[in-house]
Length: 210
Image (cartoon, rainbow, N blue to C red; front, side, top):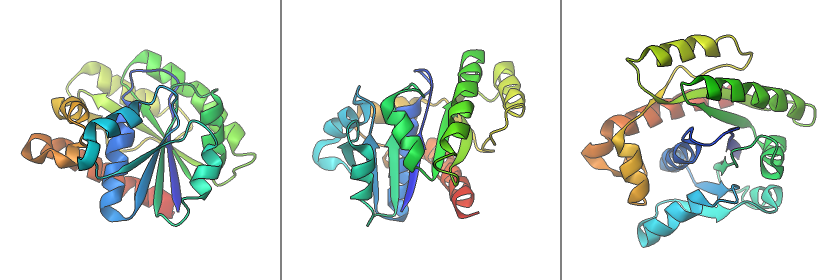
């Protein structure tokens, strides 16, 4: 089983939305579970909205995360939505048990500065989890803005690698969350967003296989 944790150090980067969409895309490939390790419970709330139409199992991972992940070892992918603090107990636990850490970064100076602290904690976690890999993902980008271009250049200054796939800010992401769906379930309304998520999945699989 591959354990993928989404980690952030401030709110507003779209971490939970990305976690839900990535978990949904992984579930198209193989059995997948999403653990909501954030005490705010946003992923769980999304699942409640979905009700009987949910295509993804979401469990509360805010307590005893490692034990719950181990009990799900018969699955292929486990995605963990962490709290928006790299110093939280749940995030620290996720860093110890994950194979890959995804760090969504909004194209703004505040997000870039916050990612420096995550970089430090990832390096610390490698003491106990030496095979831990990490990948920065530009999220909610607006490709034609000067700020997004500057953010992409600034990410090159960090030691952690950045994904070549960027997730753009699209209305489909917000509408899908409100409807208890992933963008993969939105049909033509979410086609472009779904294509980006699947492209990122292909890139993540490459990082996990190498």
